Structure formats: C-alpha cells, structure tokens
Image (cartoon, rainbow, N blue to C red; front, side):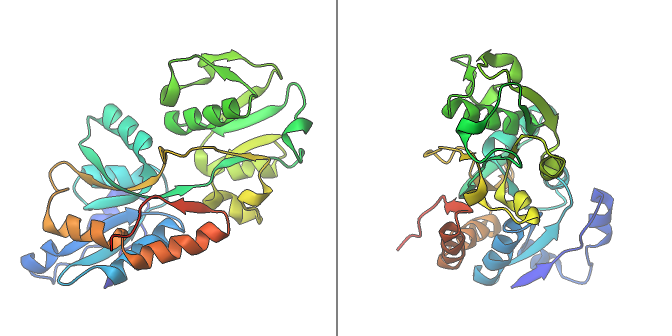
Length: 271
C-alpha cells in the first residue's frame, strides 16, 4: 500500500508533513523512502504495491541530490532510492554518515550526448565536454571517456578520478563541471559533448539510442541502490522493503524499460 509523502524543498517541511494519527506500532510498519524523479519514484510506488502486510511504503519526494541523504541521515526517512553506492560513500565520508547500500536495483544506461556530433569519429580537437560537478559522477564520466579512448587516466585512480588525473588528452578536450541536474541545459545550450542519465535527458526527447557513445559497465558498479542506515538495515520493516524492491513486479517494470534501452535490472528474482 502506497502512502505518498509531501514534496518538500527543505527537510523541515518533511517533519511538518508527517501525520500524528497513527499509533506507534503502525508507524513502525511504515517505511518512508526518499526519492526523486522517474523511474526511481515509479519503482518506489511499485514496491509499495508489492510489499507484504503489515508493512507499508511511503514515498517522500525530494527535489535535489542532497535532501534524500540528509533526511535519511537525520532519521526523518527510513531509506532512500536515488543513488549509486560510490555517491553514497562520498556522502558518508563528507558527513561522517552511516548510510548503507542494501540492494542494487537497476543500472541506468548513461553516456555522452551531443547537439553537434553524430559519432565519436566526428569529435573535434578542443571540443567542450560537460561533466558532472560531483566527485563520483565526474569519475564515472571520465571512465567512460577512457573506455572510448578519448582520454587516458592515471592507472590507480578508478572511481576517484578527476580531470587532474588525465594523463593523455589527444583531442585537447576542454572540461566544464556542471551540476548533474543542469547537464540537460548544457546540451540545450550547445555544449558539444554532454554526460547525462536517461532520466534527465528524456526531458528534451532523447534516449540512450541518441547518445554518441555509452558506458560499458558489466559489474553494475553504479547501480541505483536501496539505501538504509547501519542502525535500521536489519529491521523487519527494511527487510520487507528490500523484498518488495526485488519483487517480480519491480523486475517486470524494469524489464520493460530495458527494452527501451534506458536501464538494466541489477538483480534477479528469486524463485
């Protein structure tokens, strides 16, 4: 059963939006999951329909990539569904957090888009490249560029890579750091090469089929995860939520999006 929470622009509003009519035992059975944007919010809603009684899932929609972690850390929600594990680890390091990646759900098909180039062979020397401003997605973007031989990174940087770790840049690409949520705007402004997620780029009518090139990641390193805290990950309510997020209903929804090239499920349904 889905109980949809208030869309909020600050953590304080989340507290104001919580009702006080339920008994303590009923509240213990409600798992509040912070998320934002489809298909993440869609997955939360489907999991809410799939969760076994007496547990319920309440979707709490947020408007940026900070609120869901702050709310979870401050125990104002019970879980989040909006990030991959490397992003969560950076948050933990910066905030001395105790967030835990509980279950990978799907891997978004990310890549680079261009309003100018049709293929990787068209990329000109000195092209501007828009990459995410946050550390983990910056590293992800740079790793994709290396996969396609556009740059070479230092051998030991991996998921901590920054532009300072570029050892070879044969096309003299010029890098611009932009907030993840504003990368689609960079595409619309004519930046030659732009990293993006299907969730965001679809607002301008594009899909991964329109990308100049895509990520190659067989390990699901950047799969979107159900995230809890060290203190609540083993509770019956969170474990029930985990089972709902890995249900047949969620898998079937993701499988349909996989046909469109948007993502790949990162779990298998137990028989």
